[in-house]
Length: 95
Image (cartoon, rainbow, N blue to C red; front, side):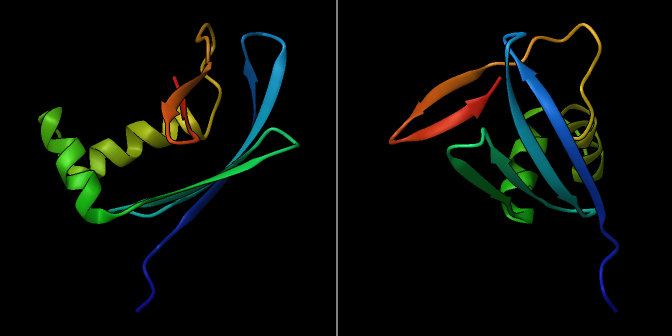
């Protein structure tokens, strides 16, 4: 039986000027993100094991952590300011 999945596609305003596009594929226990600014693309494959560790840091079940991640990375939150931060080794972090 195939695991249920949901998809989101979002144009996210960065610093009120630039835009990035975030395509999310959301499962109950993990998710995948494809992010582009039109010039460069980044991919995130958040495994079930990685999410267990992250969720435990916030004292949350994995399903709640995935739902929260989807709400912030699948839909632009009114009043939120998004930015790209250098995460080292050529990686970027959306903050």
